[in-house]
Length: 462
Image (cartoon, rainbow, N blue to C red; front, side, top):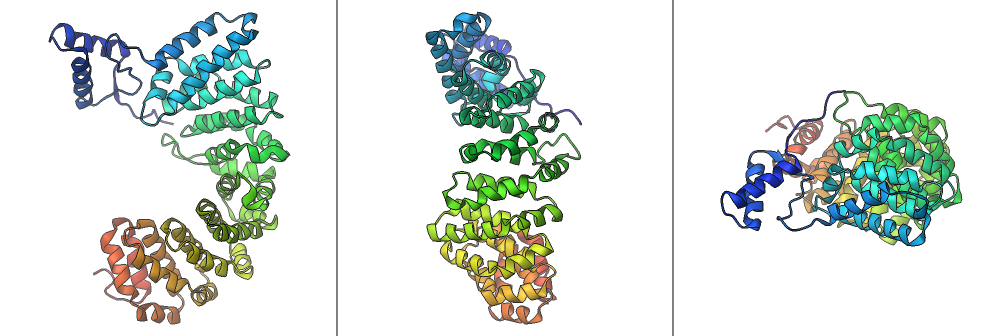
């Protein structure tokens, strides 16, 4: 593992001195001095994240709250079981959490750069075992602080993963603690391969499966998010992530059956979208995809797709289509999806969401996968209306890169081994449509060239 990318930085003290020099030496007013310092440093490529940029004499609410929390932490005694003191602590934590979740404020960087992660780790340890309400606030604040690699590394060096796992084990019957705790797991493991490994070493997967089997699972959306993060390769410091192996570990412990059960609850489940995304992350190989199908996963997904169309739920439609596309990677599952009327459901869904390219592009992806290496499935797809869908969608949304690309990929699979499909597409003017996609989108170029080639157009590179 290599070091994270370096960037120029400046300390808070150096920044404050630069502002002061602008005032004392150049005669600038405080606001002008502050703005000049920020502009000068930005032009020099200095990273100002985490720097308090208040004018002299002004106070920053994040720093104020941190200072008071540090005082409470350093003075910690049994008197903090006093309700009034605990109320103040919780109020400060909640305020910090809210401040750090304001988009574009930079407050999370300020908090983490000024000792916030270490401080809240300490508070979590002290609150453990006697104030669940306080723990929920502390965990929510910690999740808000963990916004980049530097903050998650500070969390790791503070033993944060052990603290949080201890709290989760203690609080298996408390939905609020579980939801807040797993939000920390998700935030900490994002972009940090070392912390993914640390949580897996602490057997977070076993704990997750135990909790998912409880009836309260629908009230813990962050648990599904944590699964997704743990199984996502997103740390650019490592050449080979271990997440594939983690997915197989999850599968061996029975995660497929548990997550499929969440899908069986249908659109009544508040965690349907999160569970679908988590299950997609687990489905990393043919064996796991078939296991999901064996537990009724395809039936559940197709039912959810149908219901999402009837109820106009775009979020569910996108998530379930994306999952079905992953499951269709198994040749055994391809046949099952076709036999269960999957194509008809998809075409019907496309008609319901004909105005939403984000849904249509997912449908194209599934049909593309279903048709791969299967002339019979390609023929059935065109018969169901996939050809008309592609032509109409590409004409209607010329500016949507993913829809154009997925359509080209699907068309290629529909025609590569089916000459009758090829002539049908050409008769309906597909060449012009694909060439336009190729010209308009650089990211669509390769897919368009392949589609034109397999349509039998010798001048496909033109």
